[in-house]
Length: 130
Image 1 (tube, one colour):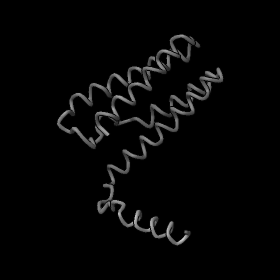
Image 2 (spheres, helix red, strand yellow; image 1 turned 180 degrees about the vertical axis):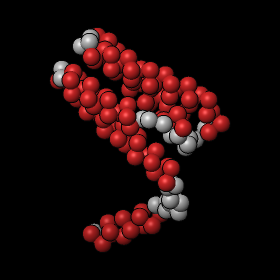
Image 3 (spheres, one colour; image 1 turned 135 degrees about the horizontal axis):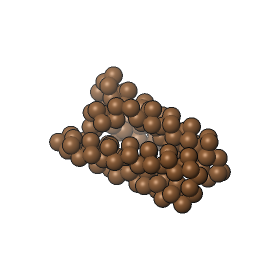
Image 4 (cartoon, helix red, strand yellow; image 1 turned 90 degrees about the horizontal axis):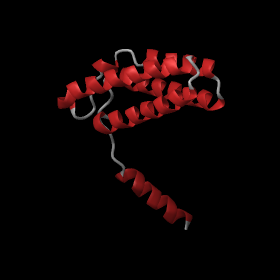
């Protein structure tokens, strides 16, 4: 039975797609920026849940820094919609700024609403362009 399982696993591995292309340095930089952005967003949300506005603001600031140059990213898909991407990028950054202001003023209702707006913005952009 163990040999049968290993054989099936071996066939599954052999059938897995092999990516022959590597990431360009630019795409690698974009991936790193988005990974950092996600890390900081998760940290920000964790601190907001705990009511630690100061730490949430620091994480949000790091997130905004990681997103510098977002509007210049090379799109994985739908590259013909570059203008829509720039518009979404502008709106996303504006929502982050508004969230920062809400965090600074400790406005829990605005923070909750804007946090959802930011999360929705991530999903919308990734579904269209990632």
